[in-house]
Length: 170
Image (cartoon, rainbow, N blue to C red):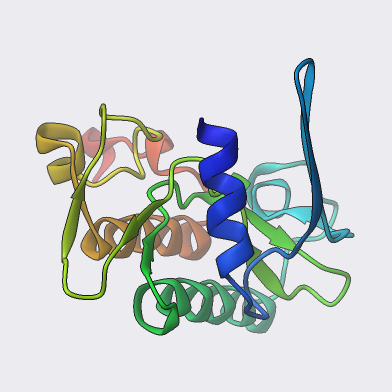
């Protein structure tokens, strides 16, 4: 069911900052999504991987703006509002020119334009990126993605995981 929901969402989206779906396979013993090639991999690799040279600030700025544009498209420009619900560095892919593309719509939810929230069947998502209100009530709104984007920006600026933050050190 989650696979079909993800395909349905991806078919509805067309934006430069969203990963493009080229095709899919839905057989009894195999399911697969075929996406455009993202030469540079995930943002996670650049922020927390073993990259020899860190990204320059102008590159990080370009990536952050691309993520924001992709999420804004999902929230404001789609026929049906889409709440991503899983925005994190692993789900931001980079092409050869370091253009950011939001990926992994496995937890995404569709909302009618007049609705501001939707109910999740259970509290899923990655700790540290999932908005507290989503974890507590299973009610997803576009604000949940804004929270996740803020947490992601915090990691981009600090260049380390939010989970590495030690409150005793200030």
